[in-house]
Length: 499
Image (cartoon, rainbow, N blue to C red; front, side, top):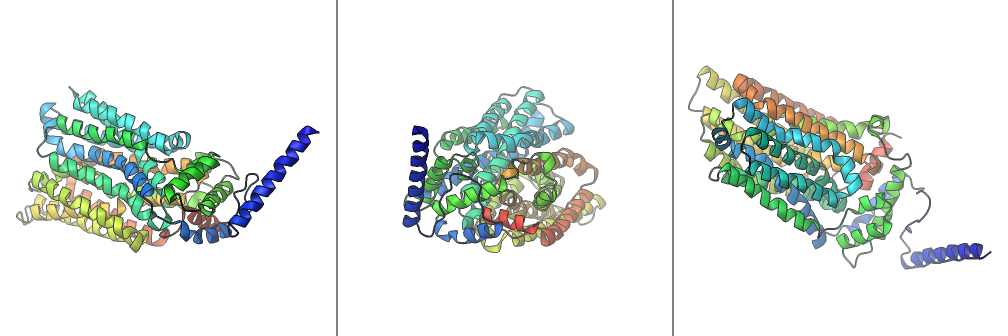
């Protein structure tokens, strides 16, 4: 009898709480505590479209984004290290072309290993703790390279650094996309590419003057600072909601949106969408290829595949080799690239939410294709002894153009789109597959790049230019515009497309 009265009292209190909330916020949906949402995808779209009042960009969002993308700065340092340290390492440790190709490409092999576990680790640990987990690998890797006495220790350090960067490549865009308001989400996630370019630019410049061991110590310092800063940012509200931690979700959301903002509508929309996506439970890798997930999966995998087969990683990792082969001073060339990388990445951050994803992707691919074609012509002229005076100029313009235009669009936008198009119940498996695709083909390109450069540089860059041309067609016909839409709206639209 007492138990029945207690249950009745609890239900009465719950009913009164709901009615009180309805009086306080007459236009809000209450945050249901039991049962699944009955809203259709169309209702979620309409609800997401009405959330413009909750799109404030607060200091907390800025700080959290900056701290998160600082991990990309560490990744950029790792990518730029192989170019600046190439001459010093090959001389001090007597490495052959094959051995240095292994050293350069083993970063992407480590990235592949990290990518395999990235989605699951991010789902189990959460976004914040996973960033700390990433830095454990990065810190150890930099120290191993700085203290390396032979190629084995050097490769082990590079592998550990690659694992950390591979984990970062998934969690950073996902975290930023989950905390940023929809009208600036593209710019904030693109800051991931901006900070990566800052790291590459720094190492391109100081790599011309600093010994390679000291360069590794320089890479170690921002990783330690990043670890300290991670403790001051909130966890992703969407991850907290997925784990059923509704109170923590609302606390994190309130921190991000500001203390004077009513976050009820956004919190309800997040929960409604997660409940709809989890009706069928967590999706395993084998279930990804069902019709309902085929379209976003094809987009995500296709963009990563084309991004790497454009030759971008090889051009970044071995920029100094390209300049030397074309007869252009490598120190001058890498310094010019470094000078341009940060301003053009800042430009991309500004215009990504103005021009949209599709336009910027196609423009980037077109410019990359023309740059690769110019390099193909340049090295072709060199092999036949035609116009030898123009080869260094063409080489400089081609390498600079390819690097700059890659980071302006094709470098960061596939990661933005990957973070936007997958619902929470497939974000682990789909995100892992997409990230693995990126690192797998990145490793193939970076390992074979030096061999192909010696075999037929002109033919290699002609292939890269054709890949960029195909990328334009792929984006034009298949990639939807996600600018200005909330994550819930994008996922509901994909759900509608298969109904």
